[in-house]
Amino acid sequence: MSVKQDTATAPGVRDDAGAPTGESRAAQEASREDSRTDMVGKALGLLVLLGDEPRGASAAELSRRAGLPFSTTYRLLGSLTRDGFVDYEPDGRRYRLGLRVFQLGQRVSNHHGFAGTALPVLRRVTEETGEATILSVRDGHHHLTVNKVDGPQTFRVTSDPGHLGALHTTSVGKALVAFADDATRVQLLEELELEPLTELSLTDRDAFRAEIELIRSRGYATMDEENELGMRAVAVPVFNSQGHAFASLATAAPVFRMSLAAMVALVPLLQEAAAELSARLPQR
Image 1 (spheres, rainbow, N blue to C red):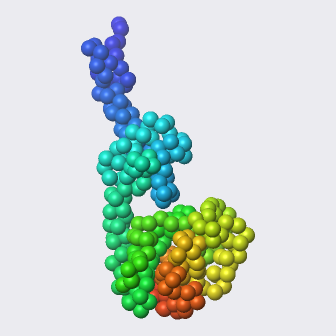
Image 2: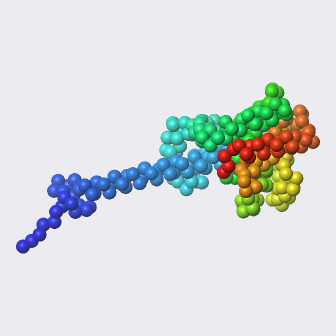
């Protein structure tokens, strides 16, 4: 006697009409879901790459760095631009992180207490100095401006919240490197790309190491037109309970309004404010 297989339940087979069975359809749905998830991952990867490019990048550059076909990269960038996660500059044909990313970042900052908790402290420092006060954290090989309070003067600092800047050319960045945990500091000293942003930027690795050691010994970092001509800044670390910097606090001003010596004279005020932030802010 022959036995007929129940094709309604056998995996991977079709019924008499040629339609996929229940299990086969489920497998196809799972495959499509995996494909959609993979595309989401690729889109997020492009956002991460753009986060490392404050000046933006072309579709071809992003395609090469992400290891994706140009057509896939271009299509994903179009979707991200449509939804506000990416901005496109037609003149330079370059893409940048969009306003939607900034909005989400601000919500995360508020959720973790950085923005609201830090603001009164930053305002108080600005009231005493008359200049901009900036709070930054490290984001990979960059610093991220978390909050800023401008001074009453007409000439304002351009490092607004959400700004990604270089670690090696800024006072906040150098403070974050100098007072990171030992393993992170060593890694950053080896891996940071010392790209010159002005003719005064440190690009020699040995000189940069020496600068970081000097910062560690004196407790503060300076920027004297290394990141932007015409601007100076001084920064101190904001320590966590392990004694490592999870943020940095700076005063910035144009060179015509404040000398480097006058900047350094603000270090005790900044250190007092940093100690208050250390006690009040959620630590990372």
